[in-house]
Image (tube, rainbow, N blue to C red; front, side, top):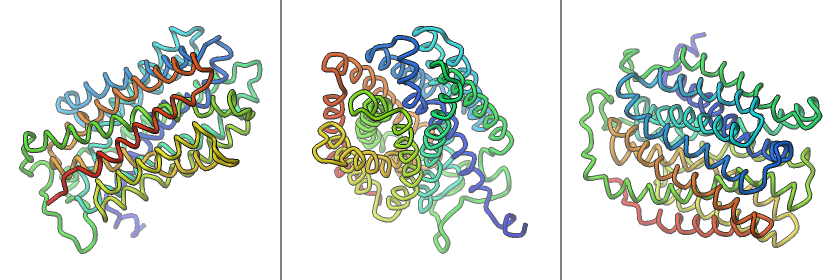
Length: 409
């Protein structure tokens, strides 16, 4: 018990961040990749309509992002985050009850709104609770929730599909996962605190290091105008990630089943490993960015992800699919954590949440255009190889652009 008393409450905030991201991204959004083959078969959806379902979700996410910073200012982090998670849970249950393309699209659109409302503020909490020497690690631990959620869906979804039978397992999955998300909303509402000052605490900083930042309610905000160019530079890099990562996670299972001939059960095992390896991506590369810098770490991550997309598109040697999934998963969820840390570095704690919301707009535009374009390309060509190639090229551009980010003084 004494050990627990010695733990700074900032790490409880990290735990609530993990749970939030498990709920709104791991379960609420990326479960679509596992459920899409059976949903498409049951509802008679072609590749283009599958792509538009993903785009509808990401358009909702964009709206949630646009609303999030304003609503946080009016209310607070705790209420906005828990309300966003609650909306995700309710809308997931409605997806499970839908009986056609349009109803699925509308319900999943609201899942996107809830995801944006919860995800952006919870990443903003990193700069409220952590100094610059630990921001990358804290944000990396939070985004490990995506991998955890994906791993859970890879285990649970095939089992429920098999148990439910009659092609209706996808409905049962959406409802069960939605109930889990509602439980997480209640828990986060109880645990989240907006700033360390509410509990009489200071920013969490690496042992032996002194932060030069004051608590968020005392710090002088860094002028937005001085960071505008860097903000848009980061935004362009984040667009490349949004475009590419969403194509991969939305359609990789469909490609494994329809293009490469894997069974749903084996594809589910791939998804489990994808989620398991993804748990480590944020902590590893987030911590690395604390040590060697945000720009170098982003360039490394984008290079590795671009290579993994090329492996999936070209399948040049036996085992390249396995290498692609492992490599992509090991890097995938580090980018949001590095971006969250970088925006706190460049703009300071007071501007971090608004700055991350702006970055997420670029990311959201990539998410909106990626699945729709990939679905149209696959409809015409018969598979997603061309879409994966295009995504790989964009990641290469993001890697190069990352090297030109300004260094922190």
